[in-house]
Amino acid sequence: MSPAETTIAMVIGVGVIALLVKSFTRDEHTTASTPDPVDALLAEVSGADPETAGEIVAITSDGWAFVPDGHAVQLIPPELSEDRPTGSWKPGERINVGDLIGARVKRGAPDHDPWRLEAVGRDDDYRAWFFETEEAALAALALLERRIVRPAKDEDGEPRILSGGDFDTARQLDEETERALDAGEE
Image (cartoon, helix red, strand yellow):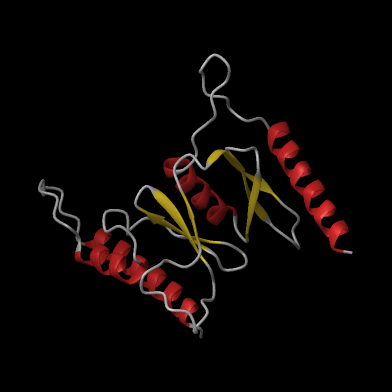
């Protein structure tokens, strides 16, 4: 097992343990908020904020993990290169508040991408992540909607909610750009 797979397995394992410990040790009379030692351990292992360490982590079909990171979401790749130091930086990709203006979950092709999380960026750029289960896609969507997605404003200053056509247009533009880039390489 690669170091990245080991880390992801540890994060998921500690998360499951944290949920089990929380469910069996809940005290209805406790009013003081004391930090949970399991969440602190999960935060240490994953590098996540201790206050959000117990949140669900969604894993894409190709192994990328959606992990809360303060007010952002960190996308952690399935494998880390063993020849690069990782002490002073977090591998993967960080999505910050407002980077996306809309997101949705859509049924994909059963053999290719059973469930697709689609997103449109602030520059109307298209992003998509593929998931094996609807639950995983919805967990990632919920994480993005809580922390990242901020609708663009229309000419009246009101939030502009994206329609299905907006997502389709962004995807088509992305596909056209990829075809043009591929044609330029030939």
